[in-house]
Length: 364
Image 1 (cartoon, rainbow, N blue to C red):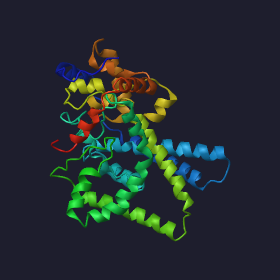
Image 2: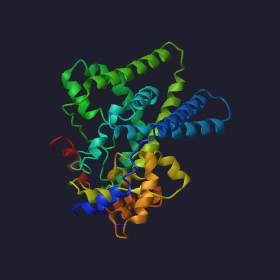
Image 3: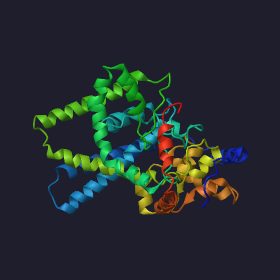
Image 4: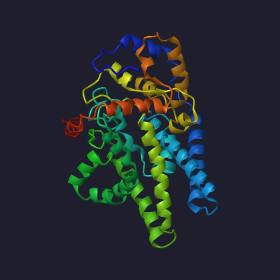
């Protein structure tokens, strides 16, 4: 499989041709979104309740744990769809997702606005991209560091909303820091979010204080003995597992070989990955169209239910040497194996991450 070509000029004709091939696939099917999300989240919550309160056989609790984690992970990935929706598209769905899932699980949709930087042609693959690390061009230790963040993330979310949120509204300097450094869900710890002038600050306050109120309510239940403290450990394990699934999935979204330079549109495409093998692992790790990540970077507004058909059309009608074809990988392991080989070959490239951290700040 070919490495991306960051300096290759975009083939505008090819992109226009691809757009014409899939032009009829951008219409949303609201009923499918509602049914899919409600079933995923509802069953996820039911299995989570069975795991958290169950006292039956270990195998039954283990099945409930795994099922809850997989389904809650799936329900959470709808945030990726929401961030790409025009404000007029299914506003009721966005509100319901936040009330039923985003706020209870400390994932309000505004925390993912940084995802738009991942699709910014000037920021993708650079330190100003909150979802990109050069793991395929850095020593293997960076991939290991990426993975060992996972157990810390649920704790950071609680700290962010229960402690830091109220304090930040009392101190303007802390508030600015929070909006830059603690208001994004991404994988690049050196990323500093640029807060636009039209930031919906009132909506930020509403979502943040809702998360705070939810955590304060739960804290009261634990302190007063309504809920046993032992339950916290089980909740933590479940959340860590669900987050870990997304962290693993993300390793196969890109080749992660860019070292921080701005990339052409074709270079961005060739750094992205489509997982096309129909295996049980693909279905579990890449829900809601996430297996077609390269396709998503070409057409971010395409709804998830259209992506399979779009990919089939492109593969059937594009020429054999089309850049889109190099994005195809048969499964998760093929993509991650290539990333790991690149990391092993980059053992002497430790200075890369020092530069990445230095350049992560806006204007860096």
